[in-house]
Image (tube, rainbow over all chains, first blue to last red; front, side, top):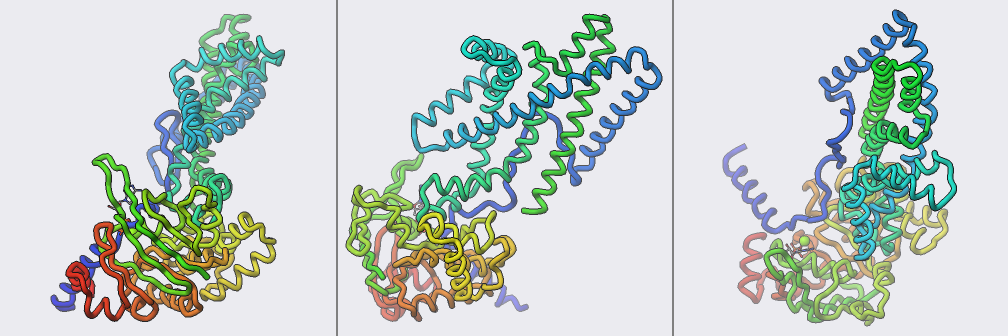
Length: 285
Length: 246
Ligand SMILES: Nc1ncnc2c1ncn2[C@@H]1O[C@H](COP(=O)(O)OP(=O)(O)O)[C@@H](O)[C@H]1O
Ligand SMILES: [Mg+2]
């Protein structure tokens, strides 16, 4: 190639830039993802050191548990069996609360991007309120409030409380997810004659789900850990089973070690599952 | 088909650094079946004017009449207007989570309440028209830019619009893909579609445009037939702009 034609190419490109407007609604390069700063690290194939530390922790926990059970069956075998009795309650509370939080979060997220001023305001106040009060305090407060207004079982009140508390954070995730969808998507839908609510339903939300799924996975893990707080509401989850055992045997250190190991192993398994889910999402999209 | 009249349109934006007059007192008419091309430097308000026509932006002042119906009148249902005026964007804006077929059928089915089968037949025939029949089942991300833009045109046509707006439809494309999109647009023009477009493809303007409108700094500076405009523009600003791009 001679110098002249390069010169012309540069000139042509410069003119192109002068004439061609930048489309402000063009999608940014790359897949939008929501990054969480809180919670455990999600191990993925690409990140070697995270995966390595995940393996070390996970197999460390398993080996330690095995050693304790095999070498010191008394008291550890009994402690494991006792604490694991709380597993169904822990899972039940976690799963139903996350579903509740996703439902509340979807409405809160939609409300925060709504064009109606007062809906915005209500959602904003809800989020601020929840974020500004310690989870334990909210949990106990809502639990008693629900309990004094309706005659419901403890587990329902606990699930309701956790849903309300996590719904605020979920709302922020949904809002960020909606805002991560390029503006051109909404405009194209509107230009095709759809109403805003049709555009949300058929265009924006289906894409948002994909963007926020990893973050929801993350919240699920946080929820599993924070569900241990319901043990103060006299629900027999893993932690409460452990504490009841302590009050019978006074083996505090041993029992709490087992409780910690159980939570750690579940959390690590879940975080790997979330990582795999994320990898799959990236492959498909 | 339709007639678009833009009368004394002004559009201001409130920005952190004050009020920005994106369009100032601009007027132009696109008669039934005409093709009108808007040219002008980047930032001169071309997109804003186009977006006002189908109500994506709300005009600050002035009137926009489509077939004599004033879209700026509060009693006009702007959604009905949008159903009848198709728009094609610079960045295609296809829906990535839907197949090409579903991209095209969604609006006819959800907005027009068309039968799903009927909408699919319509979509296939439109895809055939833009030469992408075999791509019905794939997702837009698997298509080249030129193919995506052709699908976007088919999607707009599925609403059976009376007029079409194009905002720099080939500016985001690699040079070798521009022609395939322009060919579809030329075909549309020769079928008698009323078209208002922003483009700097002078070959297209020469071949298809009835009128060329030059905009600068939010104002319509000059309007004329393409051959007059390109060979002997009246305004020195038009002259200056054309010297740069021709
Ligand atoms: N939504 C908006 N908010 C604020 N300023 C805007 C907005 N849209 C466009 N503008 C401004 O209006 C002017 C005209 O923009 P535009 O119509 O996109 O020009 P063109 O399409 O001719 O390049 C530009 O200065 C642009 O920055
Ligand atoms: Mg533009």
